[in-house]
Image (cartoon, rainbow, N blue to C red; front, side, top):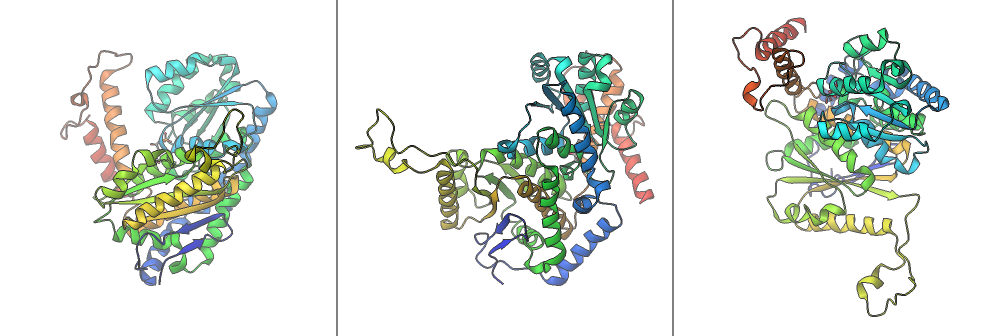
Length: 470
Ligand code: PA5
């Protein structure tokens, strides 16, 4: 069966992988069936919550997120919102607000602090006024040091009198320091369901609260995810690219382990960062995994394209192309003081729109790669609205879950990240409160296998315990 363009049900997405390979081999239906059944088992047992989130209020917590945002907007006491979070707790809201920037209607100014970088933190706080700033702390575990460090600084900066009016905590419903603290201090909270992992959480309060504050339509975001879910429920597995594409990518892995994600839209630049985290943290396990690279068209035609065409044939490019925008911006036909005659490069552009130019650039780049037999695929989006963006996040979440399962990988854990957290904990504990004398170097991190206080020892114990429990 030849792979061509497939519309994902009622969503505004079309997956076109005509240029991925001349005759891709569609995996056998029983292989797909087995992987899908394994995944469905995990969804149905409520172990993994993201897939049922579009149809389960308890999982998406949309009403709670929208209601709290409404209360805050009505109070009109803030001009700025500062989000603190990292990884899955920041990339979702950052990419969502950027993708839908044309639709943002609220007057609030949004700021994101992810990295515990002293210079960035100081500069961000300097431009904000505590009495006018809502601080939203987002951490699923409630124990991520980068986020908690920034939260402690923000709590001190804002002052105790404002904690219950100027802070929101988005975290696990029961566990973690942040939940405990928010409950004690009467800080409004929103819950991330325990079955939904960070990088799969954009359509929970992690992304929905920011969206609602920005005046975006959260019902439509969820509706977009519903369309993709309905399609996955109904379409034959062998015809659903979210089921079959992963198998082809795995087949090409030996030769082409690098995936370049290149949206042709500045609004989707941060979406490519979200994809990089989703793809690498979910699939990079057991010596398997693709190396994702984020790029943006047309800008990176003047950076990475030469390498894609003539460098090693070890990459697959994922284009994301937007069909229509609300304001395509016309390149003027006439400019006072300028005669087009004798200026062929000027003349060729006149009367076009920037959107037409961007689409032409995408088509040209895809052709450049295809002519050189460099595989590429395109996800086409009708337009950048809430529904389609909800579909886009959900479609790639399903694609990731299926690809990992076909590859015999658990796409939902991140033991490497957890190990790093333990080493950080161990070193912070050793330094003790207020220590600032630590010199810079990896040797300060305790990884000693035999030391019962070391992070490695505790990690090993934790792993054994988890094995026993499961
Ligand atoms: O996807 C994941 O699970 C991770 O990237 C987490 O989002 C990240 O480590 C931050 O974790 P937390 O939300 O617990 O602060």
